[in-house]
Image 1 (cartoon, rainbow, N blue to C red):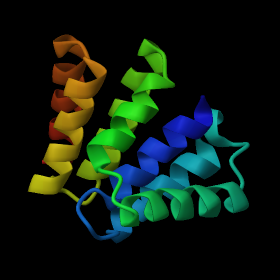
Image 2 (tube, helix red, strand yellow):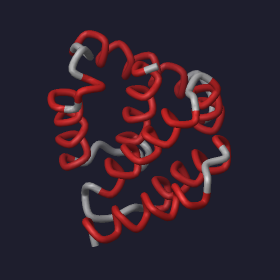
Image 3 (cartoon, rainbow, N blue to C red):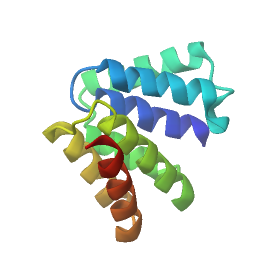
Image 4 (cartoon, rainbow, N blue to C red):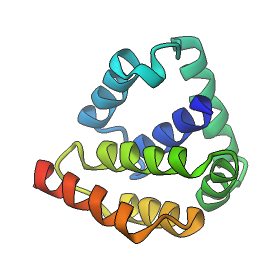
Amino acid sequence: MTSRIVDVLILAVFADGQIDKEEAHLLQKFFSEHPKFVDVNRAYLKQAQLSLHNKLEAGVSLEKLIEGLGNELNEDEKNSAFALAYEICASNFEIDHNELSFLKNMQKSWKLKRSIVNSVTLSATLRYN
């Protein structure tokens, strides 16, 4: 399900309505160095971005996209996707209202355990604040 996690990370970059350079840089770093993503090529990444953009433009809500992606991930993949998405959202040293809403939507829709959410939040807060 690496492709679904890729979709989550792309949504994280766009969650605040703009592409911050730190977020884009971290996303590229994940795709070039993270073992889960070494097989993700630029063509797939571009296609995934276009597909998600088109869905949003067509009126599919972010909430529905998150829910749908969650339906295709197991618990460990959801936890990893949430942690990586949180990392992306925090990487520009602030989490704005839209990013916070995106992350909370993931928590709720995917029924993430409070202990996971607290651990991810604490880790990101310690590194980015």
